[in-house]
Image 1: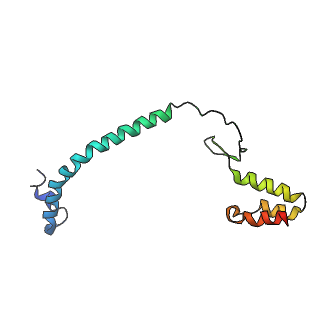
Image 2: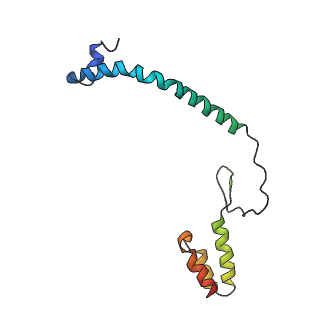
Length: 123
């Protein structure tokens, strides 16, 4: 038994043999109750993975659909409202002031600064 083996008990040093002894005694006691939930979790994850693997393809989008703004490396289409909103606002402002329209298109922090562009549109 490892709890009686001098080599195992001296792994942490001569003064810590009691720590290794209690570790060797406590590990199976702690591990045994945790093993069943761990195995059940792995079985559940496996089941979910198989469902995803053999899932039906999603239905085509219908209704109001944002245009595709980019395509990921795996072929997934991304439909973001930010570039679309920027282009709509730039087109509206560009009819009156092309310089402001270019500022709208070049805005880096759109999420925080779009209000000033909307204000510029009605001035």
